[in-house]
Amino acid sequence: MSENAYAKSGVNIEAGYEVVSRIKKHVVKTERLGVMGTLGGFGGIFDLSALNVKEPVLISGTDGVGTKLMLAIQADKHDTIGIDCVAMCVNDIIAAGAEPLYFLDYIATGKNIPEKLEQVIAGVAEGCIQSGVALIGGETAEMPGMYGTNDYDLAGFAVGVAEKVNLIDGEKNVKAGDVLLGLPSSGIHSNGYSLVRKIFSGFDLNTFLPELNAPLKEILLTPTKIYVKELLPLIKENKINGIAHVTGGGFHENLPRMFSNDLAAEIIEGSWEILPIFKALEKYGEIKHKEMYEIFNMGIGMVLAVDAGSAEAIKFELNAFEIGKIVERQDQAVVIK
Image 1 (cartoon, one colour):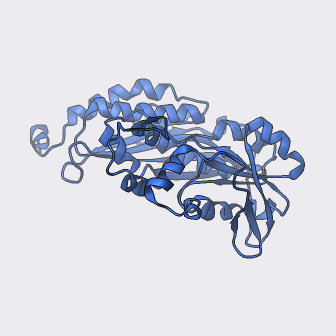
Image 2 (cartoon, helix red, strand yellow; image 1 turned 90 degrees about the vertical axis):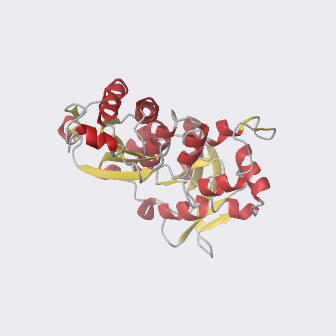
Image 3 (spheres, one colour; image 1 turned 30 degrees about the vertical axis):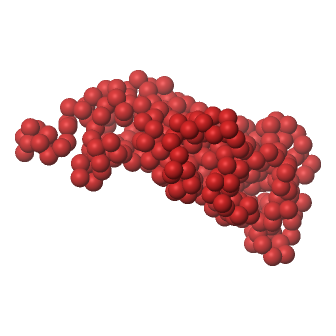
């Protein structure tokens, strides 16, 4: 099949070449120790022996951005959605006690528009810089008929490494009496957007809501916070007993993942300020207050379980909130008081 015939089917090979050319300058910014090879090979290469790890354990994570992408497409704003994609992967990896090393992305689109895809990849590269990982490869697929002309999907895959002794095993190490510290989120992050979009479906994205003090578009597309660099030193010093990345399912689904079935998380409401966007979602969506904790992060993106004796120092170091404690389980695994 000639290239001209391929183009007639809706696939622009030259545009694909242009995307690769455009993104190289962004990829170079993410290079780190261990990176081998160059962009454009059949696989991304990373030299694990370059790291000083005696008993290496690899931990991987993969995720997408969900229907938050639809808001980015609607707003024609594509330069931050890549940060979300990286964040969803590397935050999971750091929660296991590993240092994220490298990232690969996958973009599928109905029409390859190099300027737009460069913005997406620039966001991915920024997320990699924020988390200290290398962007060592990826794939862009032009799929007319599968996606609309302006549509695209974005997913990613990351790999991290940990010394075996530094792996965080919350089921073994988290105990009654541990203090729970909450690290602030930047907003909704990248979960619950099917509901978010439904709640705000009647609003123009440029609407300035008084309770948010900003255009709706700006608040809803705030990228997910990346916690890697602030948590990694504490993990290497074995100061954290358990970590929960608060994503889809909110507090009730994610916190129990970091401790054993005989324990519970007792959360003190009011120990941190709930962000205005969550109050707006509860108001306009007419959502029961308790249900909000089953859907959203409510302003807390990560929860750490730490020894009571070291909680104050860690709280100060991370600028975190003391939001509760681990107790013996009586009924529910998460209790909001």
